[in-house]
Amino acid sequence: AHLDRIGAVDGDLNAFLHVSEDEALSTARDVDQRRAAGEQLHALAGVPIAVKDVVVTKGMPTTAGSKILEGWVPPYDATLVEKLRAARLPILGKTNMDEFAMGSSTENSAFGPTRNPWDRDRIPGGSGGGSAAAVGAYEAPLAIGTDTGGSIRQPASVTGTVGVKPTYGSVSRYGLIAMASSLDQAGPCTRTVEDSALLHELIAGHDARDSTSLPEHVPGFAEAARRQDVKGLRVGVIEQLEGEGFAPEVRARFEESLAQLESAGAEIVRVSCPNFEYALGAYYLIMPSEASSNLAKFDGMRYGMRVVPEDHPTAESVMKASRGAGFGDEVKRRILLGTYALSAGYYDAYYGSAQKVRTLVQRDFSAAFEKVDVLASPTAPTVAFRLGEKTDDPLAMYMNDIATIPANLAGVPGLSLPSGLAEDGLPAGIQFLAPARADERLYRAGGALE
Ligand code: GLN
Image (cartoon, rainbow, N blue to C red):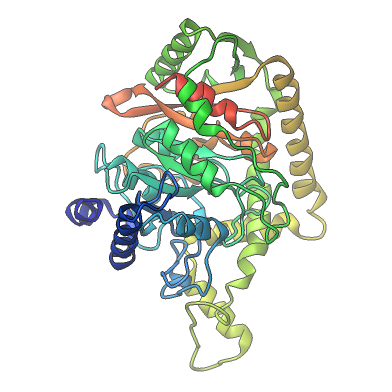
């Protein structure tokens, strides 16, 4: 049914870069046979899933939304994909995204934008717009995204779906094509909080192949989602993330969600996180710095696209020509920003200062979590904007992540779920943030709003 749905709507939506029909069907049939034979399988066995194209999949093309990787077929699986395959979830295919996960609208994909299923003239968020649109359009019941600065939560917010960025280090990054290694984290995109919880439980866990992987696995997420119990839960509203810059109806839906939590027994308090104001600026130094280093391996020698200039085919000219032709504008912009921020003479002023701000943001979180159990804010400042509306204005595009970035800088988990319909009848989202390794609190709060 999902493959049929993809066939019917994806020509318009462009949520998928690759559909793996044969593999999905053979896994689904295998699950049927095993169930018929009485075999005990994982709760999600047989439930189809779409995977963001920044996650490597053995035998299945993986581009990260970039021309430079077009045609590359990875020889191995990311750890999280191994887990999906071991639990026998049919993989429907790979979803569209901003090139190397840089963007907030999926318009930076080298393979054309994805459209928002609620209004096809609008963006589905980014960078994981393909995963969110696929789930929102019923092309897939589950999807995997990655969130470096909001790329799971912001697309969830503008497509009326649920998206979770787990605690940094709780889901293995082995096999994720790295954008900014200290910020990247993979997580679920689904239609319900409980579905996210089930998928999160499946993909989390220690992995010796990821040096930042946390030692323990904290399960019990689905249990927390089902309980729907927020009695006594202290919810802190972040003062810096509810006022100016947030659309009136987005704020109204947020306030209504808070009222709903309050009537279910939660305690709502205001908290101040004064350094969040500087989070976006720090992110746009740290993220490009790490990306400029991570993307150095795309040199036209080892993977994908290779352009050989006829007149002067040296190693350096091949690298230059391949990178020049293979990378899009936003990727080039960030490589330039990152190499500049890291260069001798500027390192302390830019990268060094940004790391100090990062510490201050972490301290804001620590201080807040002494007073409350979870924090809350609107996920994104507005509903989905129109295709092309912000493509010429990188700063306006970056502002979309104002509410989501602090969690990445601090490594804390976040969950976005729909708060209702706002401007133009389009979905808005509310996000909850919890202390590191306390992801179950997100499900407790989110479950109570469904
Ligand atoms: N939109 C943000 C950026 O462009 C976040 C991206 C992400 O989380 N991958 O960097």
